[in-house]
Length: 207
Ligand code: NAP
Image (cartoon, rainbow, N blue to C red; front, side):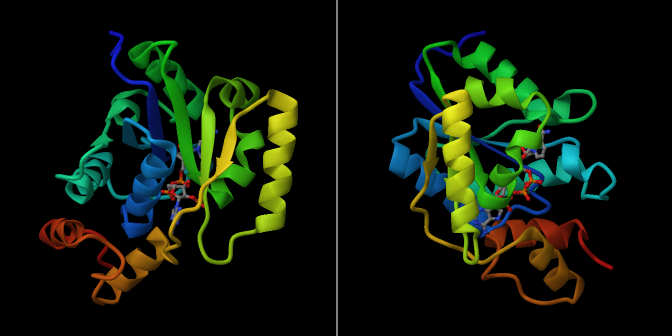
């Protein structure tokens, strides 16, 4: 069913294993800079480039996303990819969201730099790059020159709207969070307290 009231929706797809403060602030900064009506966090069932990687269950990753964004206006989670079969290809997700939000809604897929630099290798890249806009966030150490070249190539080839966000930079990765948790360390500077509580209550990311 079409939800007619939205003009601009952001979509932050991720493995979120686990979600951290870098993800939450990327969504908030994108929403503010682009005046988005809302941002949907969509945990991947199987990330196409991480098919051999063991992750926390989809249920736990979604629960951590819900805990992280609870009470934050404009941020929502969606189990669209977790409820589907097979590998979570983004072009399929955008197709489904298009049915939900209608042709009038401008959709923006939000990514970090590393993800965007590989986007031309994603499944059905041409459809994907023509079907929505892209908001690319940066973090300390990002490859600025390579990103500028990639943005310019994609704009020329596919006519894609791409914006390099002026987001606040958080030097955080899910790998670092997992490593710290495995070592029994405190993660309060990396993840929301509610996520840390969920992780401890459910015994996730122990060696
Ligand atoms: P992730 O590790 O959970 O990260 C989610 C997003 O947040 C990524 O774009 C990531 O960018 C960004 N991010 C992480 N830490 C950040 C920080 N500190 N500051 C700013 N941004 C940060 O998710 P993922 O495994 O990369 O997957 C991202 C999305 O791409 C998913 O929806 C996945 O399904 C999709 N994907 C699709 C295909 C395909 O369709 N063929 C292939 C690959 C991925 P960085 O990449 O820069 O870390």
